[in-house]
Length: 280
Image (cartoon, rainbow, N blue to C red; front, top):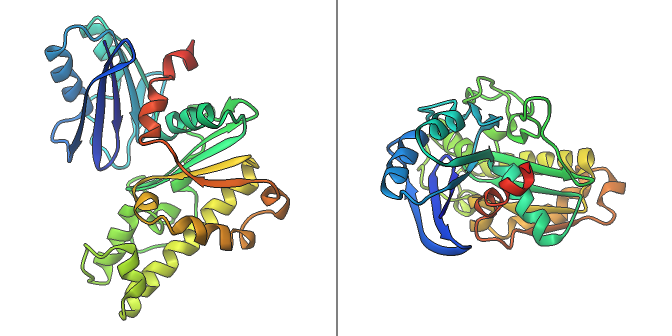
């Protein structure tokens, strides 16, 4: 039996599969334990698990968790610690790197970018068949490119991350800053008569267009796939991007690009199950 986990800032999703057939699926919100503690619990319960695949919303390298702006870390050396204690093989990779592996397989594209707008702002890139990882596997950290100064400090330690303007955590910070109802949705911000609410909405889209334009100009993808909770709950964002992206990206890079919603229910988790083949 194999275990796949997708852990982000808001949810932990996992699946147990046997012979590629789903055995059980679960979604945990606001996980009270860390990833290491969760793994110990599930591996103690299911003794037939042989392989663990993890999609992780943070920076990881060679089985070691380097940092995670939106997740509490209870064990950095997760691969070695689990493999030493249990008879399993563990694979762990950044969640958007996992997502772009799944999207590449679905679209059969060798030049594709997967972006997630959720709790944070994430990006995975495959360019000319190569997954872009960088020297220590921290490349394509889109949410933390410099944008402009804010009153807040990002969990990475900077005050000018673009994620502070166009992510779920960023929206929450701005609503608190202006004393607005924290439950206001993106559409409710747009339709509000409150000038601060409209300012938050406008700044969100300016930052989002800037981020998307940067991706397209830098990586010249054939396909840009949009996912994440904010995108999926506000499907009109795709049309706004298509309408405005010409003002933010290199025109030649826009000539033949396809910008689409993800068709996968959980691209990060599906991509995690591909990690063994990817690392082979």
